[in-house]
Image (cartoon, rainbow, N blue to C red; front, side, top):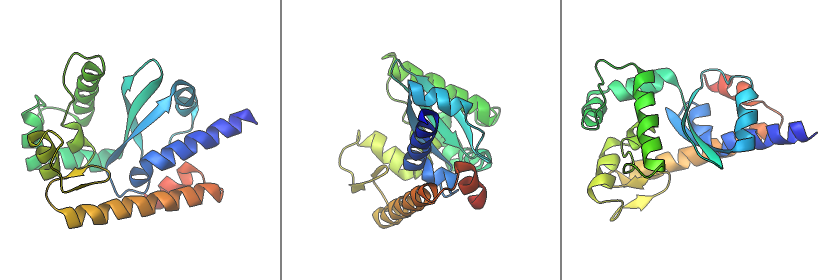
Length: 191
C-alpha cells in the first residue's frame, strides 16, 4: 500500500541520516523531511531512547534534531562545551536540555529566515569535536584537513575513523531495515 511505501521511505530517510544516533554511537543527528514525510513521521510510533525537536519548519522541508537525551546532556554539560556555548548566550548552568534545544531552534529559525548568521554552536549539539567546531568558525569553513560528516581541523586520523564508523553503522542499519527489522527494534538493540 501507499501507506507502507511512505513508512518505508521514512524508515530509509531516518536510517540514511540518523543511523549513528539510532545505534547509539553519536548523541544526535539532523533529519531533513519533506512535508509529507513529516506528517507520517509525527504519526509513527516513538523510537525507544530517541527524542526529537523540530529546529525549523520551512515551506517545503522541516529540519529535526533526533537525539539521545542522556548522551546529549552529558556532552553539553562537559566544561569545554558548556564554556563554548556560553559565548553564544546559552545559560548552561541554569538551563535544562529542553531550554538549550529551544534556544538552538530559535537561533536556527532566525538563520533560515535570514535574520541572523548560521548558529555555529550546532556542531557542538551534533557531537562534532569542539576543536573542529572552533576551527570551522575561525577558518570560516576553509583550509580544513579533510571533510566527511563535518570539516576537520585537528585530529584527522581520529575523524576518519569516526567517519568510517558512521558509514559502517549506516550500512548495517539499512541492511537490518531491508531484512525486515523496524526502527524500534534497531534502536532497542543498541540501547
